[in-house]
Amino acid sequence: MKIKETERLTGIPAANIRYYEKEGLLKPGRNKENNYREYSEEDVLRLQQIKVLRLLGITLDEIKELYMQEETLETVIEHRLLQIEEEETRLKEVRRTCENILQSRMDLESLDQSILDGDGTFWKERLQKVLAEDMSKTLLDQRQFHFHIGGMLIWGYLLHLGVTLLTRNVFDVSRKKLWIKIFARDFAGSNEMIDAGPDGAEMFFLFTVAFCLMIGCGIAVWWSAKMAVQTVVFHLSALLGAPILMMVTSFFAGEEMQQSICSFLPVFWGLIIGYVLVLLVIQRVWRDFFRKTRYPAAAAIIGSVLIALIGWFMTGQLIMPAVLAIIYTMYISIFWSVADIDAKGDYTRYSAVLAAERIMNPVALTLSYWGKSKTPLWVNWDR
Image 1 (cartoon, helix red, strand yellow):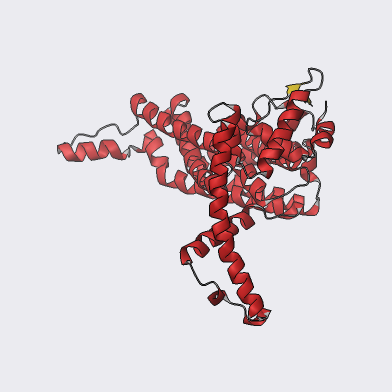
Image 2 (cartoon, one colour):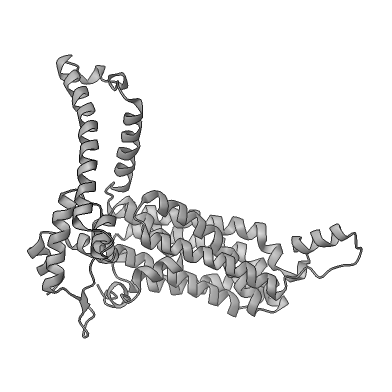
């Protein structure tokens, strides 16, 4: 059955059903003709079970453990009862404060935090929890949603720019400034000029470490639904992106090409930031710009041509700037559009952060859409 029918039978919104699928609680089949999800009676039964468990306050992590047979229902319910006892103790504190407000006939103007007497640790923990929930569940309109994505992407590519300016000498073999070898030369007291270009072993080691970190960040995005985790991973991904690109070019490009790339990259990140700003302006004027993937894709083609021409003017080369431009502009445009399509009008700050993180981390994006590319991208090309 289709998701609409499943939604009707279970009383669970489609957005939640997709989220449970993303979390691994459901594995619906796919229609071979159109790649749409097909939900079975077993899927409906599981969703009804999930609904009951969530109404009882059982966490998604505990529900996963139940279905993976790592925990029994009895153990989970006993743990929930202990939590309820703790919650009741805390609610008594809240109730007592509410009763004090009523008994003292306090009005809004005289209400301040002095009323929160008792356990200060309890109120501090409760405040942190409430503030975190408010921020992660804040509803946005469409423009605010895209403003959040664009703002994060601009910040991420600014980090790319900063890291590039700090590290490009390491990867530019023509400059002879690889600090590790210079330090070794000075330490040895040798006056001989040592070739400062990174050798294959060093570059492979650096690339392996950076790429493993990027994979770890991607898994963290896929595995965790916490806003704090998404924000930290976004910044780590932004810091790793530029060095990984420069290391990849070091493997395959000659000395002259490396020099051109290292010279062009700071300008390139500046142009990409400008491109993101242009997309934001277009979306502000044309609200449904990201609703059809072909429109952002067309913008990517135009943007890549302009960036390639600027790169040609600066470096005297056309292929290298053109390849970088088409990859980044098309990647940003298409998956920014996918974020709008996936939101289905339910725009939140959390979904905006998640979308920006997926764009910044290709590993996270791959894990999110593995086996689903036809649904978010090609099926929605004309929608």
